[in-house]
Image 1 (cartoon, rainbow, N blue to C red):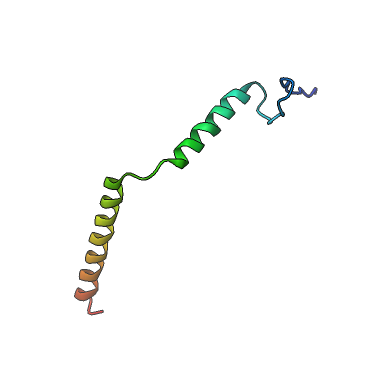
Image 2 (spheres, rainbow, N blue to C red):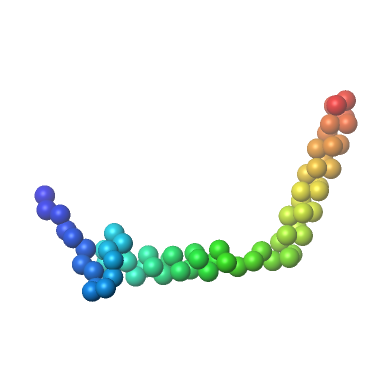
Length: 67
């Protein structure tokens, strides 16, 4: 069995992705951009309302069970 070595461009480090190294770097850049985006206020509001509804439901369940 023979091993293949990925060829790299001069000045570039071998990232282990071989011919897909361009895809890997683009995915890393996209992931980094998504990480830097803020969470929209509407989504935060929706999550807070969901949290409150779950707490209210849990409190109602506890009262019915005599806790």
